[in-house]
Image (cartoon, rainbow, N blue to C red; front, side, top):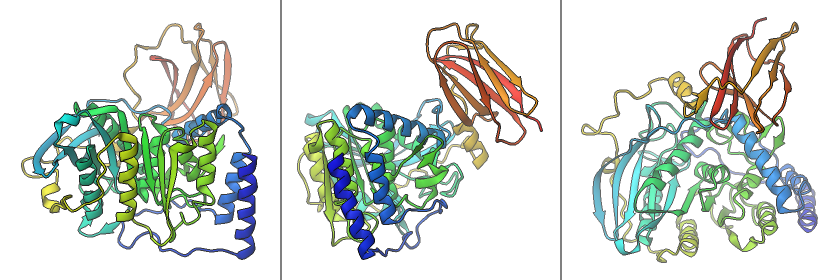
Length: 483
C-alpha cells in the first residue's frame, strides 16, 4: 500500500500542477436521467480520497473489515438493512425465437409482489455444454429513441453473442425504462428498488435449470456499470464482473439510480465508486475504461488502487483493465470484444468475437407485455404502494414477540427514546427502528446482555416500530414520538 500511495501522490501532484481538466457531456442527449444532486469530486480530490482509503488497511483482514462496514453503510443509506421478503418470482416466459446457435424469449417476473421486471432471455442451443454459465446484462442511460435500454442494437448484439458463446444471458430493464412503466426513473426510491431488482434478477437466473450457479457473471456500461459493481459488492454470488466506463474515483454517476440516497457516505463510512468496485476482490473482474469521460485516468488512478486490493488476496492476476484512450462513453464493439474474451477465459466459453450472426431484432418482437400477456391487473399503481412493498418487514420469521427477547421502551422528558434490551440468549441481537410502512430508519447490533440504547429522534412526530431480532426470532414493539 505504501508504494501505491507514493505513486498516486506523484500523479496527484502532476494533475494539480498542470491543471489537467476533462470535458464531456452528461447526461447523454435524450436519456431518461434524474439528477441526484450529489456533488462530484474533482479529479485531484478523487485521487486524494484513494490515498486516504489505502492508508486505512494493511492486509486482507483489515480490508474485509473496511469493506463490511461500507457494505453495511450502503444498505443502511438505501434503507435495505433488512432486505425485503423473497416471495415467489412467478416468472412468465413466452414467444421463443430460434437463431443460429441461440434462442431468445420474452419474460417478466415479480421482484416484489405486484412489481414487474421485464426482459429477454438469450440461451445457447448446444445442449452438450449444459449447464451453462449465467450472465446478467443490464443497460445504461444511453438513449436512441425508439431503441432504449435493452432494445438498443449494441445491447442485443452483446447478449446474443454471449449466448452463442455458451452462456445463458438475462437482459432486463432499469426502473422507468422501456416496459418498466409502474414508476419512473425519478422515483425517490429508485436506487434501492433497482438494487433489489438486480438481486432478484440474479435469483431468477440461478433458478433456471440450465444454469450453472457456480458460474454467474454481470456486465453493464455507464449506469449499467454502476449496477454491476454495486451488485457485485453486495452479492458474492456474482463470480465474474465487467463494469464498463463507470469506475471512477471522482464521479458518482449523477443520477438518482446511481448516487441516490447519498450512498457514498453515511454516519460511519465514506467511499467512492472505485473502492466499491474493489469489493469484488478476489473474484475475477475486468474494468473497461476510455479516454473521453471520467474513466480517462483509470489506468493511473483507479486501477492501481483496485489491483492493490486484489494483491492483498494474492489475486492480482484476477483483475484487469482494458483502457481504450481513443474511444468514448459507450459499450461499443472494442469494449464488447474485450468482455467476450474475459468471460470466455473465466467461464470456459467458446471464443467468439464476430457478431455477424448476432441478430438485432425488431423491438416489437422483444416486447414482453402485449394483448396475450398484459401487465397483471394487480400490479402496484403508485409510488407509495411500491415503497410500502419495498420496505415491508420480512415475514419469514419463527416467532413474533419471542418470550426470551425482552424489550422495554422508555420515552424520556427531552423526547429521546431509550430502549432497554435484556436478552436471555447468548447471541448477538439487532435492534431496528422502522416506520409503520416498514422502512428501516436505523439498525444497531449488540452483544448478548443488558443494554441501553438511546435514539435521539430526528424524524417527525409519528408512530414507529422497534424490532428486536435474533436470527428469525423477533419481538416487535410500537411507540409514538410526540413533540
